[in-house]
Length: 352
Ligand SMILES: Nc1ncnc2c1ncn2[C@@H]1O[C@H](COP(=O)(O)OP(=O)(O)OP(=O)(O)O)[C@@H](O)[C@H]1O
Ligand SMILES: [Mg+2]
Image 1 (tube, rainbow, N blue to C red):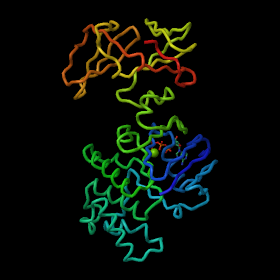
Image 2 (cartoon, rainbow, N blue to C red):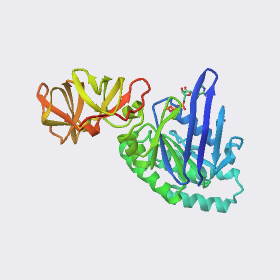
Image 3 (cartoon, rainbow, N blue to C red):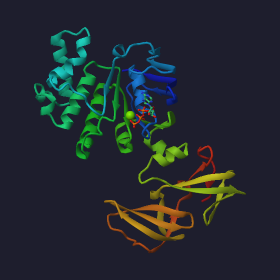
Image 4 (tube, protein in one colour):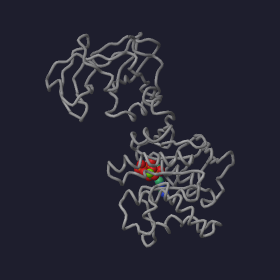
């Protein structure tokens, strides 16, 4: 267990910057998810923490001590990658014990620890099998056991579940969470699945283009996104975003003019989540142009004075059809405003 800090960490390759600048502190025993689009620098960040890459600038700090010059094998970090990379000609036992070979651990003790950790991840009955005789989920558990056998200060998980089918993913999410709680090991999970991030981690770090956009609980990110990027990235189906112009205490969006509380001027973006729009007799007239049943809810697209909007209604049955007239309303408190140029969220709100 350890407190982990990245201080102004940067990683650049010849002609490419993988991580622009990261400043982040992770509490001892915390479970943090790093969420972000492909290529934003997630894996690079993990590899710097593991000591496989060295940062071009900045410091990596474990428990208050700078570890930039500490070799990967001396950092006591466990890693699980998307491809588990088990040794095919070794048994489960040998795979799990492998990381202890380079440590001063006696064979009997190594075996005892391997058994203990195998019990924890529930593969102790498979101890003498080879990876080819295991299911994907079982192999994934072996990889997890192998990462944990050294009793790492830090556990790094880089998309560990993306090779598993949907049902197994659900099970493994809960299992990893349970094991993390039992061991209280500081854990960083890289994923691009926001449900995975939300269900597994205590806090989420949203990365974009080599930087941290925002860090907080899932609720913080959803209710108070600090940037347009976070607003658009968190939430599924995604938030409706409308370009508008703020002037004289109101914003104009397409054919709508909405009064403001607080000051805003120039190009702004109005954000309203699909679940914040409701059909209401006192709403603004709109016309349904697409109906998409999504299981327990129905997603509609409508042509409205704001432009095209998506809204959601609970229930499996569609209550409106293509071409139907509907009146739509949203609570002013649910609308978010952003500065179009900087992407920063504005304090100004739509007046109720
Ligand atoms: N060895 C390298 N040499 C040059 N550029 C690299 C190298 N490794 C990564 N990059 C670049 O750095 C950026 C970040 O890569 P990284 O693998 O960290 O992204 P990621 O967020 O993990 O993406 P993904 O979700 O696709 O795994 C990318 O633009 C990538 O092309
Ligand atoms: Mg990656």
